Length: 253
Image (tube, rainbow, N blue to C red; front, side):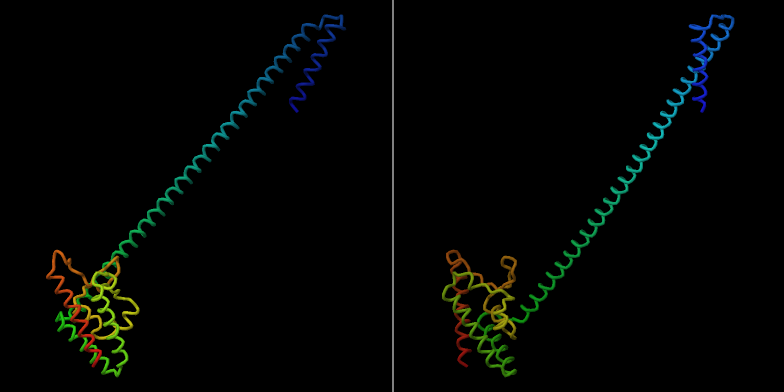
């Protein structure tokens, strides 16, 4: 409203000035009119200047508010980023802790498994106090006694037949390593021989060792080097042949 009134007043003053300049011949009021015109122009200029300053102040204030809002947004974004980074680090730390815990647990389980395996091996070896042909006879005797007490002659015949096949293959081809190693958990071995009293012990008495081959627990008969250890090779082979003979004799009983 102020701007409208100001514009109207300025227009009237200008109108008076035009009349003086071009129409009115009476000059008695000219000084006052000119003074009024100057005053109006100055006032108008001041008003424009004030409006410009107000507009600039408004723009500056708006710019300051925008800058402050931008700063606040950046601060919130930075805090959110820091919070997310902290959360990520915490999650990574927790994952690392769980991984380490799982690793230690796995190592502990592996250690216990190795200890259990070693204990079982010691217990098995303790069942074979005598090695060689006498030990073979003793273990087959234990097997026969247990199975006959159960009235299971068929199982005895299967066990003796499987032992005969095993040792016959080794004696026939002693250089063939696949004949000289038997997986300790092989289903066929366990079904025919390993599950019986004295079954596994026969192999130990005949010179087989408890050994892991390619990570697999096996009964393994090591062949001495014939060129560098002829006596050792002869003793090893004689034990195998004698075991085969004993098994064959037991089959005929």
